[in-house]
Length: 293
Ligand SMILES: Cc1cc2nc3c(=O)[nH]c(=O)nc-3n(C[C@H](O)[C@H](O)[C@H](O)COP(=O)(O)O)c2cc1C
Image 1 (cartoon, rainbow, N blue to C red):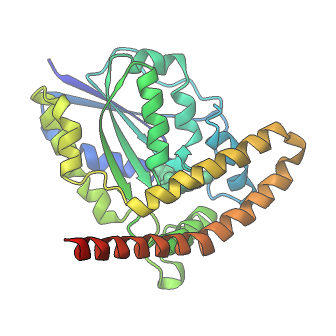
Image 2 (cartoon, rainbow, N blue to C red; image 1 turned 90 degrees about the horizontal axis):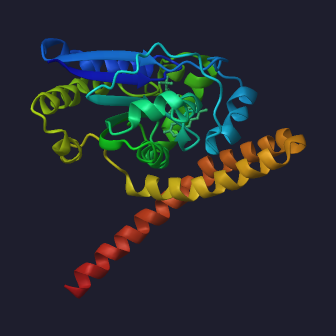
């Protein structure tokens, strides 16, 4: 009997679909595996490119994981052998369509007692969003069997500029011909087929329990310590802003504008300072170790 993989994904720009196509490419040559991909579609689409207002407006609901209405998905409820959930972070939380899907009765049926592999396509801050998704998978009775992450490899500030250009212009090209391409690099997208091969082989050999460790050992989800620490602090602050916006709907616009100022200051001034402080702390720690050994 063929092993069934059901991949559920959302993608606004098409990047996540490209990642999945590359990931599953080697599985086309595996006769024992059948892959079905289904898109999660919100009833009200999030228009791309974004405007400043529409981009800011999804902030509180994303952070507080408040669901939006979805189109009825074209999914039969037959349990797959492996679920692949492919998502992207929005404001350090899972994107609204994916958060919403995880709160549907269909998700409760599909995820119960099912092994799940998450695939993330992010700028570079995804750890907090994965924690939310993992908690939801587990509360539905599923198990996170592995995680694959593709990020923009440009330095943090450069990727902020290029992603802002991409999101607000709709163009995934080099800004002024000098900046790197925004988003996940084409080579990295193509290279994700090696994770797909591993996934297919592990599934056919009934070794899904080893998948998570194998993916981690091979570097499928590399975590940057300084970025993860920044995310942790950022998420706490985001939650405070988001709660205030939902609690005071009449002040939502004002609070969103104030939040926007804080976000820009945080990204342009505080986050480089924070990275420098982290580097200095690491340097002194290493020095101290050398002295005491
Ligand atoms: C509203 C919004 C918020 C985002 N927040 C983050 C974030 O917190 N961390 C991150 O690494 N990327 C963030 N991104 C980038 C997305 O995760 C993703 O890489 C990009 O939107 C392309 O995804 P897609 O075309 O597959 O939907 C954000 C994008 C949007 C539109």
